[in-house]
Image (tube, rainbow, N blue to C red; front, side):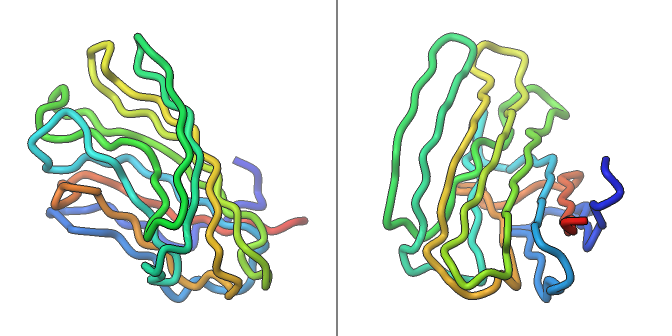
Length: 172
């Protein structure tokens, strides 16, 4: 990892949690990165992960995704939503002890313009139904980003052992 990455905060869950929030993000960086390894307790093979920025749930998000699952590929666009999709997390009936992993990138998080978010995610499962997502997203907000919240779509929880890391990147 380049030496311009600085770990701001981490959260490795010791028990189930409905969401993970990184708040009071300092204004000392140019870009933000969140990396995760996650599993939800939804009674299914997978659960969609979601992102909210600055607690905004007013329909200010849009995203386009590419999805492949080992046998088919698809894509779609969504707008005026109250979250950004981050792809799939493993869920309760996925292969035991597997966790989805992913990364999101937010450039220029302090700017007074709309914020793009890119993410990539791999849902782990020992079947052809395992999913790989690539997403291009946009938050319509123009405030500096001070908090990010990740949560499972249905869950209702991330399970113990799920881990989340927030990094700041300096353009230097």
